[in-house]
Length: 141
Image 1 (cartoon, one colour):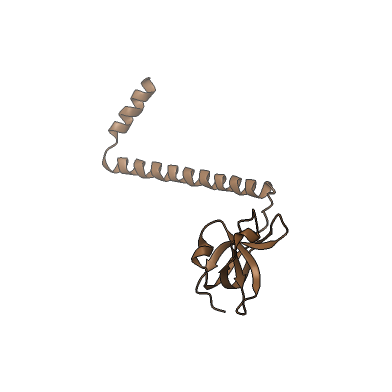
Image 2: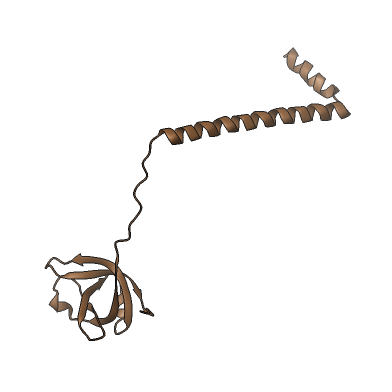
């Protein structure tokens, strides 16, 4: 306990220029210690990064297909249980592919010439259709 009292009295005795000098020296010492600890920490983290041998996953490949044509209504009774109500037709009126969407985007695009993007799928009955994810209405060739 006496040691603490002696240290306190010594600190209290510092005045003016001595106090500034001691404060500057302590600041520089602790700053150096902090930089050194940060450097060691950074070296350890980089070493762990290189040693774990992690393999990056392959890049994500977009497997969607894009078609261009006019969205036309088709009677869903032709495809029972499939909920297919639209077909994409070319300018001559020939069917390109059947269309199905999980929302109302095809009903909004009915009668319009659009570009549709989605995933090709085969129904339970073996009918090929496009599960539409995106409809671009003002699509240019």
